Amino acid sequence: MKSSHTTVLIVDDEPQIRRFLKTSLAAQNYEVIEAVDGTEALKFAQRDKPDLMILDLGLPDIDGIEVIRRLRASGANALPIVVLSARSDERGKVEALDLGADDYITKPFGMEELTARVRAALRHRLQVQGVAAALVTGDLRIDLVQRLISRAGQPIKLSPKEFDILRMLATHAGKVLTHRFLLQEVWGTANAEDVQYLRAFIRLLRQKIEPQPDRPIYVVTETGVGYRLKMLDEIPPAQAPGSVETP
Image (tube, rainbow, N blue to C red; front, side, top):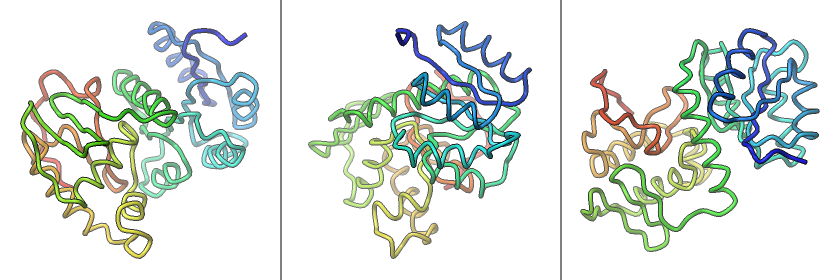
């Protein structure tokens, strides 16, 4: 019988990484299963039905990208996958996300950041099962049914395209959406490569919904990859000053 705890499948061939993740996640009441390679990952995903997978890409047998491909091809579309890898190339990130990964964290990483991404990925799984009519993050409220947006109780008027972008981000809240995905979903396949066009609309959207548009806390950039809508538990109580983020 499956445990009532949230189960996380850790797939990594480095014992010290698995040990660190297991100890940290267990302290937060997650139940942990460990796999040392891609073959075990596919086997345990099928056998144990985990709630989430943390997946290293550099595995000794089957590449992590291929693990994602096989999982999604097998119909395991509801399993959230957070990729954890030393690879920092943008192409690898985009490929993993386009194949169906929910998020991507590059080693070395902070446990606080990882657990925030885990929570976001688990939340996204619930949204896939049934998207709520309204989503609230911080003082931003997005009503997808009535097409009403407000911040701190003040209504915000968006253009149709701005709303369509925000709707996609809200529907997949916490999940990184690639440039190509957003362009295809909002403008169609003919504009799938026009990243500058998307950036212009993201800039306009931020001008309307962000407290400080040049330091966005809701619609954040995943450099070279795309964008995601941050949820409240990912946003620090006092956003630390840092470098200006651009689309």
